[in-house]
Length: 307
Length: 135
Image 1 (cartoon, each protein chain N blue to C red):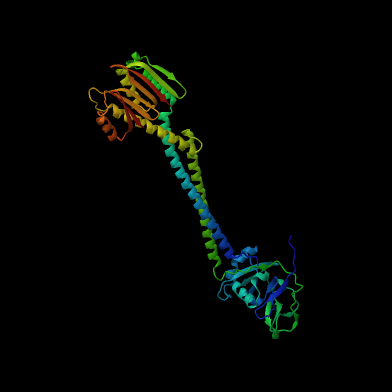
Image 2 (cartoon, one colour):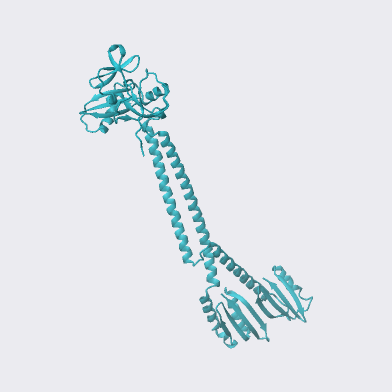
């Protein structure tokens, strides 16, 4: 819920003196803090007028960065130029924190219907000439009173100060902002493309699982691969060892009478081998790196090769 | 003073840029991780499907073995074959050397998974045989 708080209004002028400002206040700018013109232009909207303001004020403004404002008054436009930095410096000089400023108005829009001159400080007065509020020294005109802003009804014509306008120009700010936005956009596109690429890779991976009838988890598949690799290793070893043993050059009376493979072991019986005459066989097996045990029964040598 | 402070916009843009960079780094990392994972899965799938084709293709193994057993050199061996769910046993009480050499040559030179093999010499020309092939 928003409450309409009645705030104190202060007439800001470089020559006025103020007490401590601790609560939020509205500011009415003295004519010494802005330039004003009343013009008639063949345009309809205030927006169009604003675009023309830099060139309208070009000849009268001292060098510096200015902001512009305008509003329509009957068939004419009241246009303003103001220096944000100057107003901020004045606020600072008068010990008015910017954070305590609620709204800022031009005296022109707020004090439009005064009768005669009104004193604003010891040395200056304001009065209306040709519908424009102007500032004059006290001695020029006889005042009818002191300006009282306590019962003022504010208009809708407020302005905001560009606090950093004097450091970075608005155009530069827009350019930096635009570059940042483009970078953000490019990063966004890159993120989108990368995410799409990741999704595509994951889709191909899923296809791979389906095509090769793989188990659902990598762990299961690795276990299965380990099992088949072990089978491959054992089977290759069986073939290598049998082929080597069968290829051995045996003595004439020696023959292989039995060959069996079971439980990762190869059992071979050599007929005609007496204990002590087997050296050429065991030497050959050792040279191949085979691990074996042997036993003798009569003239039979039983060899047990571990796979 | 409702005008937005450009410093706030700049901070917001920097924060958004930082966030986007963080998201991009995360997305890139995820992409590389998924690519690595795909490569690993591809290698695993190739190895696994190759080995499965060799050792677990029941129909192919059965078909090939039956073709071998129909060979003329094994006719005299009176070979008995028994088919079970996970294996096939080939038994002969008396097989001649030609038949034995032919059969062992075929089995040992192919990639069948030999679970049991028993060859016993009976005489100069005959032997007994028990062979169990698994899949």
